[in-house]
Image (cartoon, rainbow, N blue to C red; front, top):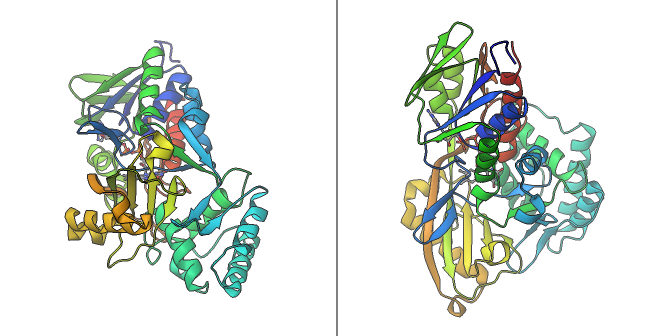
Length: 433
Ligand SMILES: Cc1cc2nc3c(=O)[nH]c(=O)nc-3n(C[C@H](O)[C@H](O)[C@H](O)COP(=O)(O)OP(=O)(O)OC[C@H]3O[C@@H](n4cnc5c(N)ncnc54)[C@H](O)[C@@H]3O)c2cc1C
C-alpha cells in the first residue's frame, strides 16, 4: 500500500487470465478495477445464449494437473468436486476400445494401459513404452526445433493416429506436423507422468461461466473491486509513476495488467513497447469448432468419446455426451480442433461431416434423430504452438504487465496457462516496483 492509500491496479480483459489477476491483486489489498469490453465475463471460455439453450463458446476439458485453475475456483467459492466430473484419462472410441488409464502411480498406470491396449500390435506398444522411457530419462526435454511428427515419427501408425495426434491437437490445437515437440513433452510430463490424478479428465458439469467467470465477479465485487463489463479500453498513456486508462471515462492507476487478446494488447502498447507489440502481432492462430447436436435418446458409452478424424471426411476428434455431464440428455458436443481447413470449407460442410461422424459412432442412426443445434467456430481459438515460437514476455514496461494464454510460459494456450499467467502478473502488479 502506498502512503496515499491502497495501490490502484487496472486489469484490462475479463477472461480467465484477467479474472485470476484481479483476484490476486484484491488478495494483496489493491484497489482493483477490471475492464471487460464484452457484456459477459469469461472471454473465450464463456457461456453464450443460443436460442433457449445455454451453450459454452466451445466444449472445454480440464485435467487434474490444472492446479492453479482449481485453486482459483476454490478461492472464489466454487467446489471443483461439485462442478467438474473427474474421470481417469480414457481415450476410447464409441465401442469403448482404446487407452484407459486406471490407478496409480501415473507411470505404472500408463504402462499397464499401453500393455493392455486391445488393438495395438505388441511391437507398437513396446516402442511407445521405450519412447516414454527415453523421454523420462531426458527429463522430457528435446530439440527446441523439433515438431511432434518428428518426435513420434518412429512410433507405429496406430499409436500415432489414436494417441499422439488426438492428444497433440487437443492440448496444443496444432496439427502434429507443425506442433512444438518441446511443449508437447512438457504437457505429457505434467499430465501423464507427474502427480497421482494429474492425468484425470475434469469435465464441466455446469456452464463454463459458472466455473470461474461469474463466481469470480461476485467474489471481486464482494471484496470491493469494480468490475466494468461492456467497457472497452481505448488507450493507455504513461503518467508520472503509473498509467492513465482511457475507456468510457479517464482514470489513473499505479499499475496495469493487460489481459486482453494478443491483437488488442499489441494495439494498446504499440507506442509504449513496439518490440513487444510486434511479438504479440506475429502469433498465428488456429480455429476450433464445436458442433452441438440434439440426438434424442442417444447415450454414449462414456461422457467423452474418441473419434477418428481425417482431413477428407471427419473433422471432429472428440464427442461429449452432455446427458452424462450436464444432465442435458440427448445433447452431444463434437469438437474439431486444428480446424483451419474445415473452417475454410464453410460451416455447413463442417457441421454435416461432424453429424455424419456422430451418426456413425452411435452406430444406429435410425434409433435417434440427429439435429444440429448450433455450430460455434472460434477462428482465433488459440495460437499455433510451433517449434521455437517467440511469445511476448510478461513485463511490457514499468508497472505494466501482460497476462493471457499467449504470454511466454511452458504451456500451450489453455485455461491453466491463462490462469497461471494471470496470477503471476497480478502478483507482480500488486507489488510496487
Ligand atoms: C473453442 C475453444 C475450445 C477450447 N478448449 C480448451 C480446453 O478444452 N481446455 C483448455 O484448457 N483450454 C481450452 N481453450 C483455450 C482457453 O479457452 C483459453 O486459453 C483461455 O480462455 C484464454 O483466456 P485469456 O484470459 O488468456 O484470454 P481471453 O479469454 O481471450 O480473454 C481476453 C478478454 O479481454 C477482453 N478484451 C479484449 N480487448 C479489450 C479491451 N480493449 N478492453 C477491455 N476488454 C478487452 C475480451 O473481450 C476477452 O474477454 C479453448 C479455447 C477455445 C476458443
